[in-house]
Image (tube, rainbow, N blue to C red; front, side, top):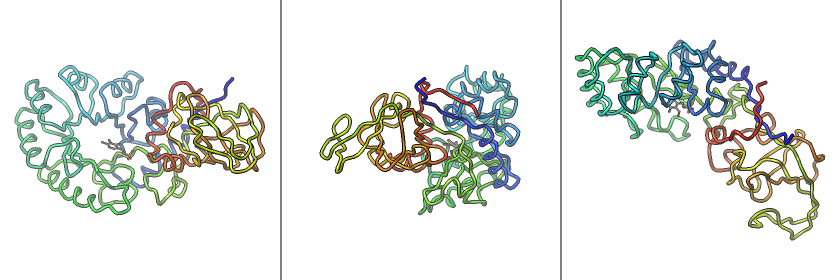
Length: 353
Ligand SMILES: Cc1ncc(COP(=O)(O)O)c(C=O)c1O
């Protein structure tokens, strides 16, 4: 066996969901499980957290459908709503909460009226999806007149995880005004806002990344936030090579040894979803001992520094998990943990612990 594996920990997901629940201070908690449960498995993540949250959030109708077909009966919010009439009918069939973010969706609803739970999405400054406040008020009126009064108002924060954030309060004010004028519940908070801005909790929060054992902030670790590791990625050492000063390692010869040493070859690469752009110096750990990548990541292998490290062929190398913070790997790669967790391929073995 190659031994490249992802360990998923349902108990950690449940713990993290309880942390979200405690922070939410009475607001409904909708766990975002889109993108295959941030790489943990859609149904697995939902089942693991079902007892500790009020509902789930997905991006797409297919994801919502999978949850329903796998027996998840709790409310499901579809963040991109329906793409066409067929999906609108599916939303009705599966009793989903759909986000309406654009006027073309309002038109489609008015052309096909019927019972449906609509969360009207506001553009409060993210300028991605959502209706501007005045347009949203108008749309809410038209929908109500056709018997489809929205059940809630939502928006999404652009900078709640940013140390120098000045936009969240402005977004909050705009959204709150519309929700109050429409007398509707409001949902805004992602993980960062849930943890950092209690004033944004309103009636429903929508945490994602914190549930998966990662911190939304670069100044505070997941452990400091009492979040548990739910996703551990590891592989085995398959060769150990001596290296002389001046010799390089891997494609492109991007790393050269300055002194005599040892390099370990690890059976994981971008074909498994480990990021190819992880530079030399990206953290890893062998038998609990911290080390770093040297040389370029290839499709099936990567190489690590074994100087001063006790290791033999067959030993396990942790890529992220208990000894190596996934957020530290993400920072080294110039990306975010979300991307690392989502992009692990189906090639590594999956173990539910
Ligand atoms: C609409 C919406 N709500 C909530 C979230 C959860 O955000 P986070 O994972 O940062 O907590 C996301 C994720 O991007 C989202 O798109």
